[in-house]
Image (tube, rainbow, N blue to C red; front, side):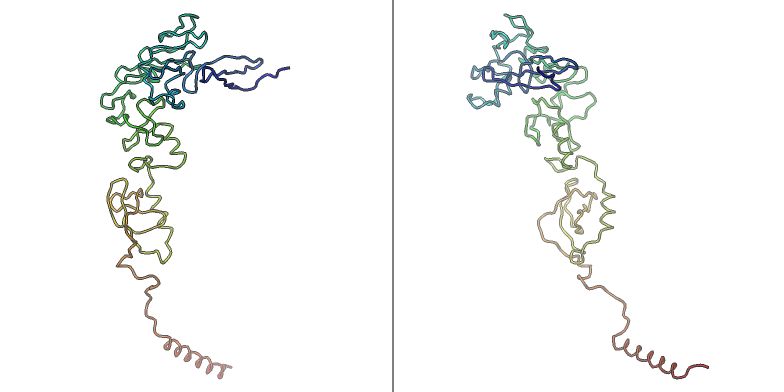
Length: 319
């Protein structure tokens, strides 16, 4: 007797040398099987014909990631002219419904981008004419900013053309990426998921300019340095540094915990070329000044006089 499945299982098979995914959903008292076609990038019931190599793929990402049988690295989604229904194998021009079996190939279809999305969840997607591609989200929540050259949230701070670059963390194109992007305080832009990974791994600097992406507690660092004295041989040493926040070059006291910028007071600094130099106004290591308390001879003579007084006192005890 077959046991009831307790969790979703994915069974992968090969259909036309690409992925066909069957998703088994478990209910409370019964097992149901709901077929969902597509790839790891999109769920859809059709494949698109690559205009460059005439091979069928689930999506443009599958074409770009497939073993290089095509001379073109990135397929032009806008140039797609034919699709194949994976329910009846009928080939036709890009449409939301199959002409032969009348099945809906995807819940969302864009005739400009040739995008088919048949997600199980109610994902909001809209096409932006200025961007030339489809965006995830509600149209009323976003606006196309000509300065940023991208669809951004209303009331945003403009980051001119910064979205037309690759993410400095994963190196994926930001403009056409399916992942959301966020600007850092320094105006450089990364994927939201990449920023989370950076913070998770305690990477608090921008990977481009090394400016801080979180607020640093300089007062706490000051207190730690005051409470932690360096060994004598490293005391009163000075080093040359470059501040990542204000770009100032200064010479500051050396401490193992951090090097404080002489201009802005930030600890987001790096050492520059050059050896450590001892502060010329500081005493050499081991040369600790003490008050003049006399020579050892003077101390010995005073001690002898004291001993004689004690002897005389013992020879004449009081009655």
